[in-house]
Amino acid sequence: MLKEELSVPKHIVITMHHGPDGDAMGSSLALYQFLLKQGHEVSVVTPNDYPEFLHWLPCNHVVVNYMKQKSLAEELIRRAQFIFHLDYSQLKRSADMQHVLRQATAVRVLIDHHPEPNLSSKYLFSDSEASSTGELLYGIMKTWDSSLIDRDIATCIYTGVMTDTGCFCYRNAGVHTFLVASELMAYNIDRIAIHEQVYDNFSVQRMRLMGYCLNHKMEVFPEYRTALISLSMEDQKQYDFVVGDSEGFVNLPLSVKGVRFTAFFLEKDDKIKISFRSKGDFSTNDFAKKHFKGGGHLNASGGETRLSLEKTLHIFRELLPLYQDALNMP
Ligand code: 5GP
Ligand code: MN
Image 1: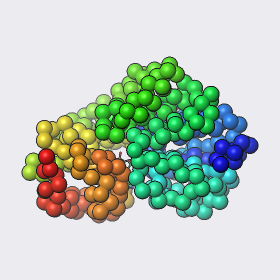
Image 2: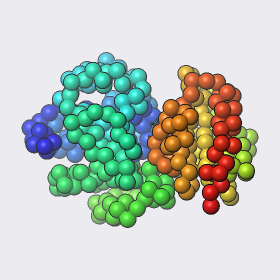
Image 3: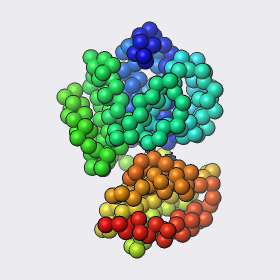
Image 4: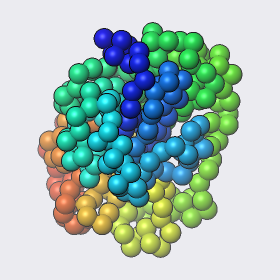
């Protein structure tokens, strides 16, 4: 049993997917504090940068960024007796860090809510019904030792649940999610402050970039109930783009009457990163897996290409007619 194996202090590394979001960081930092209280030596290692609107999270200062502190991160991973993989279930989603992780000899523990986990681990906590890794982790910590959960841990968990459910609005927020949220509230967390830190913490340039996207970069395809937004490197340069600035842009066209499928294309140095969102039964997960080497959940997924932005957009537009029926289901 994991609990027994961890009854004596161990070297532990917690890590998550490339481009960590609120759920990845919130659950990792919650688990960090929980394991620390048990007397372990714990590190949190991210594959790369994450948005500044998550830097206020309790214990954020301990995070080791693989892109910036490669040798330290590699040493921690090599030395680890346990590695917790949070909020992802395919090693390739660790991007450049996957090679070090593959070579690690540590006992692996996977805690994730993505469907079809594909990462061999001794301990597997996988529940695709859970709204977020935070919700799942909260249940694990509660049965493990509920006395260790405190306000800071609850704050981190709440951040994960809130961001992955779009403030409790998406379909993935179920009865259990609201029960968890109410239990977290009992730790006296400041949900207003959490919301403000995450959603009202953007630069002026980011707001102007959003306006530019809506005015000039949104394409709507009414016959397919679809819309896309794309951002080239040139666009990003114009608006002093920093990591996190396009967070949530993929959701914007879902507010257009009738639109049920959206895609957001972000040009990077070496690839095009794509986000997909849908309303209803259209599976963005299947779409991302089939055409863009990606995956995720039914209504929220991602993928990528190594093609030009123009070519990628062309492929996407050409795919839409093939999905006309599925996209127009009542
Ligand atoms: P986002 O669009 O916010 O980056 O990601 C939405 C969801 O899809 C998240 O659950 C994320 O983990 C997943 N996802 C994003 N990109 C990829 C990808 O390239 N591959 C896979 N398998 N999942 C992804
Ligand atoms: Mn998640």
